[in-house]
Amino acid sequence: MNKIVSFDKNKFLLDSPNDLISLEKWQNTVNLLSKLFNAPAGFLVQYTPQGFQTTISSQQESNPYPAGAIIEPEVNIFCRRIVETGHELYVSNALSESCWNTNPEVHQDGFRSYLGVPVNWPDGQPFGTFCVMDYEVTDYGETYFELIRQLKDILESDLTLIDLYQQVQQLAITDPLTELSNRRGFAILAEQRLKLAKRMQSQLALFYIDVDDFKVINDTHGHGVGDRVLKHVAEAIEGCTRQSDVVGRMGGDEFVALMMLENENDLSAIKSKLQQAFVTQHLQDLPAFTATVGVCLVTGKLQISDLLDQADRDMLSQKLNKTSG
Ligand SMILES: Nc1nc2c(ncn2[C@@H]2O[C@H](COP(=O)(O)OP(=O)(O)OP(=O)(O)O)[C@@H](O)[C@H]2O)c(=O)[nH]1
Image (cartoon, rainbow, N blue to C red):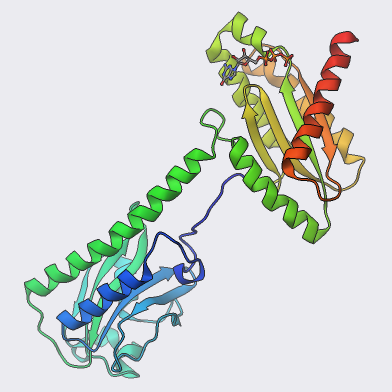
């Protein structure tokens, strides 16, 4: 649970509305496409492993497919060919090509002609297709091909915007050295995790981990080695956690992990597992070091900031005990 994914490319866009996309602008673009082609139907279609969904459908009485309609991935529709090949497809008369004999768009709904272009995410992954269909045989010249490519660029520039926005969002909540969530990212994910735990009535604990005398490691071995120690700590913590736990770097040599407990005995077991994970590092060409682990059980309606304070205080008192002991 270490990444915030606000838009999943494997989900239908209509199921995860996004402020960055103006569906109204896309609707106008699809309407314009069918108008310029004088075609009875135009579409923006999204492909995901669940199938093909008409994201936008031109608003015409002659168009039989409404927005939101889903066609299963194995059905022999024109758009499927584009997603499979990654190439434009022009079928001027589907009845003259036997490969479309099983296409329901042709044999159930009476379409004869199809022109479509692939629409891709900026990483080249297919989003789907942008296409026009006609009940008549057509004979589109090169200008029509140029036109549909130009209009698809408008749609793809919006997909680029979503992608960039997500990258920036991810950067703002990620610690670049360890690639764990930073303080901000941790707070967001931990809030989600607390809500889920409440619903599932599961017991959580927050661990606060601070490397002992880290300044000395830096001063003795240099910052490069200090950085490697921090990366090792991050990996060791991740190695002790499950997929559903939330791990973060609060800054400097301080890390946190919000973890699920099977029972309260787990607390000390997890603490020693964490400490054990750090002491094996001398095998990896790193200076020996230890860490202090504070913990706080999640009870009642505490905010994540209160939990962090409590676990931090527990860690500091343990550190004091260590130095005075
Ligand atoms: N190499 C490296 N050092 C960092 C980084 N961020 C913070 N530091 C250093 O981490 C050190 C943390 O020092 P302190 O807060 O005194 O902690 P400490 O030396 O572990 O002392 P105790 O917590 O009392 O055990 C400081 O010297 C910071 O400059 C980083 O990203 N990389």
